[in-house]
Amino acid sequence: MTKLVAGLAKTQLKSPLAQCLLIRYTVQVMAEGAQQERTYYEFLEGCLRHRSEMVIFEAARAICQLPNVSQRELTPAVTVLQLFLSSPKPSLRFAAVRALNRVAMSFPLTVTLCNLDLENMISDSNRSIATLAITTLLKTGSESQVERLMKQISTFMSEIADEFKVMVVDAIRALCLKYPQKHRVLINFLSNVLREEGGFEFKKSIVDTMLVLINEIPDAVEPGLLHLCEFIEDCEFTYLSTQILHLLGRKVCLCLCLYLCLCVYFCLFFCLCLCLCLCLCLSLSLSLSLSLSLSLSLSLSLSLSLSLRLRLRLCCISPEPCTPARVWSIEEVFLI
Image (cartoon, rainbow, N blue to C red; front, side):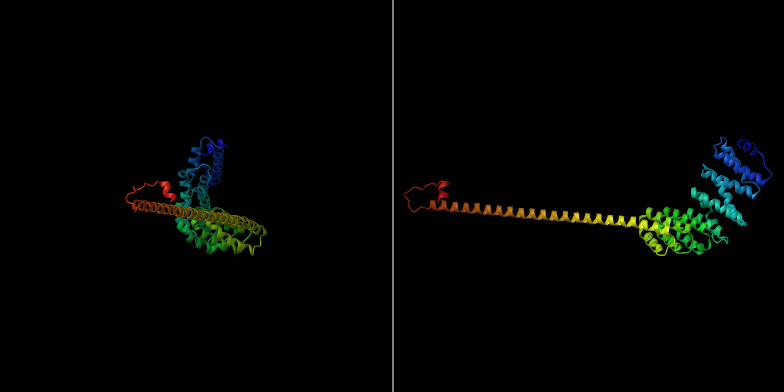
């Protein structure tokens, strides 16, 4: 096949169908790791300038599906797909927006150039095209556009098939993980959609999305659990009810464990404060007793010194003038 592609890539085939088949063979050869990869890419890029719209789209889709394509190599294909967004043919518009939707998963910045055209397609009469356009905007839009996009989605959410509803839910999940600050708006939207009619796969995708948001975003735990509890009150799918009840069991046990740990922590903290207060009281009482004993000892020593002075004075003033004054010893003073 490598020789076939290498030989036919240098020629111009007359049939557009044969050219499309050659493009697919070229992608297959490039996926197998061919040595002339740059030559094959130039062939695909040259097909973007073909006169047939079918060949142009096939070449653009092939470039977008290349495994190791860079953002620079992807730009010509995105430009061609952007031109198809304004085509009067619904098939071309649908094919282009679907290809851009896939590209936005890996290269959202490259698809940002098409946001203006995608916003104009939200009001398309074909709801499949409008759904793909708005899911692509959810992947490439900024945080300030979230609320406006949610309002636009809610207007036609009930008119599209479950397959496209699942795509919208998946895009909302990626958007909420990208901008966690908008989790309340997105969870409210999911809860409203969860109450509407839908099949098992659609409801399962919503429940799985809310479970992911609860596990990944701490602030989304409380509103998410409240909406899920409201859903299981009137849920017709046993699997989803069991899944939600399992989550509630895990979260409630975890909350109880945290509550008990906090109670034990506060009890220990209270006991420690009480012990510190008792130690402080004991130290104050001990210091007070020491000060009292010190003051008593000082007063006793003062009284002894005063009594000693008085006795010495009495001994010095004696009534017998001829008798010399006697010098008293300290032992005698204390004995008297």
